[in-house]
Structures are given as structure tokens and as C-alpha cells.
Image (tube, rainbow, N blue to C red; front, side, top):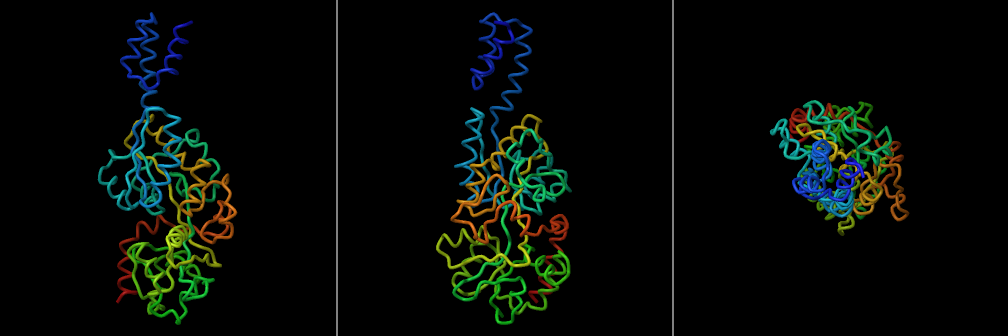
Length: 368
């Protein structure tokens, strides 16, 4: 057996053994000094790549549950000795935290929404994915890919209309929200802006959130509640205190299966597209970035993609996952190809830079 064969066998058999013990064993086995020096360098790389302790940022709720069941086990099985710790928080909370830490963030990767994914490009926080690290993600349609070339979608949901089926007929159009019979019966948000983008779209004003706020100023008497969370909004609609709310399909369905009296409608003009984006962060070595990207790619594995659908009512990013029969026809859950056809992307980069002004505009034009 040659020195190279001997060291290769040790790599294969002892990937998780302490580095010093491995090198001592090679000396005792009579392996040459040159080969040992070469092997030591390769072992350091293997340790960084295969036995990484990853910290990953995720959105709270069902996301950590799904990842702990369907993503982390398959990764750890493929990378013995590795570990993945999930830290949950809203995309804006997590982004503010990593931005404050500059080039030394506390986590090497995570999930971000449309606005924070675009802010990260502007602030130069992301590392581009290498194609060879993300084979599962090659099944994501080009039309769904993260604008700007950084990040990869892993689950999505249409932003449409949540309603109480005992109070109203199923809304068919975004313009139904303008009907005077819903005076005081619409719930809106002042810190998420897709409903205003939709209002602008159906009023011939493009996809401008600013223009959408102006449209809603004509119908502000319909607004009876300003929601600050998905849970409180679903509760209000379920109890009939308000009847309709622009809302994400996935979270509407999650509320419905929890027993709340809500349903979801996909407007005929199209829903606004919401995307969860995986990202890897600057400030880490190339081997750590590689292993982080390989972990994040499990989010687009067939097992995990199906779990997003069946356990979270998210829409899959991958074309390789079909919608199960029991969810076929559900407005809240769309295939990757139907997401392309039935949902509308908006300029999240523009919105992310205008959030303070939009909130002031809403306070001025809709709340006063």
C-alpha cells in the first residue's frame, strides 16, 4: 500500500477522530513525513468542511420544527460530527442584528424575506451560492430566483385575501376590498406593504406601494383594524370583528387548521409573491461558506420541500415537488410553475429603502 492510499483510508475511516490522534497513528504506522504533512493540510480542510458547527437564522413558527425534522437529520447524516443550531427571529430582527455586527456576524447563513434579501445586496452582506454546492436548488425556476443574483428561494406563498366565510362570500378581486359594504370591516398593516402594491396594480398605477397608499386613502373608512401580527389578525377575522384582511396564504391555512374560522382567496388579478430566501453571509472562510451552502440546499431537497407543503402550507420552490392531491385546488398552495403564472413579484429593493417614508405616509393619509 502506498503512503497516499494509507492516508486516504485513514480519512475515510476516521473523519470524526481528533486530528492529533490521527497524525500520531500515521507516524506509528510508518507513513512518510512528506505524506503526513500533506495529509495534515487535507485533514484541516476536511475538519472545516465536514465537521462544522453551523448557526443558522430562521423565521419563528413552523420553520424550525420542519427543519429539525426534515433538514438537519439528513445533513448531519451526510456530515458526521457536524451540528446545526437554529436561531429564530423575524427577518428584520435578524438583519438588524447581523448588520450591527458588520463583517463578523454570529451566523453563517439563514432565511430572509424579500426586503431584507435586497437590503443585504445593497449592504454587501451576502456571498453568492456556488452551483456545485446546491444541486437540489437547480430545480427552482429562473422566474422565481432571487433578484440581484444573491440568494436562492426555498419556499414561497401567495399574498392574497383572508376572509371569514360566515360573514362574506369568497372575494374574487383586490377591488372587492374597496366595496363600501365593508366599512370598518377590513384589517390592514402599516409595516408590510404588499396590499398597497396590489391596490396600485389594480388601479393602473403599476406596482408602486406609494401609489397604493394613495389609492387606499379613498377607501380608508373600510379599515377597521391595524394588525401588528398574523395571530391577532387571524383572531379578529375569525371572531368576525373584521371580515377581510390582505394576508399570506400559508399563514391563513395554518390558522384554519388550528380551528380559526378563516379561508383564503387568490385574487383573479394575481397574488403578490412572498419568498423565503436562503443566504450565506460574509465574514466566514470559504470552507465554512461551502458547508453552509450545502446545508441550506437541504431546504430544497425533495423531503424538505414536501414538508413545507404538507406541514406548513407553503408553496414549494422546486419543480421536482408536486402538490399532493388533498391540497390540489387550494388557493394558498401553488406549485412552482403556478407561482410563476399566478403571483406577481414587486420591487422589494425599492420598498426596502422606502419603509420609513411609507410608514409616515400611511400614518398621514390613512390613519389621520
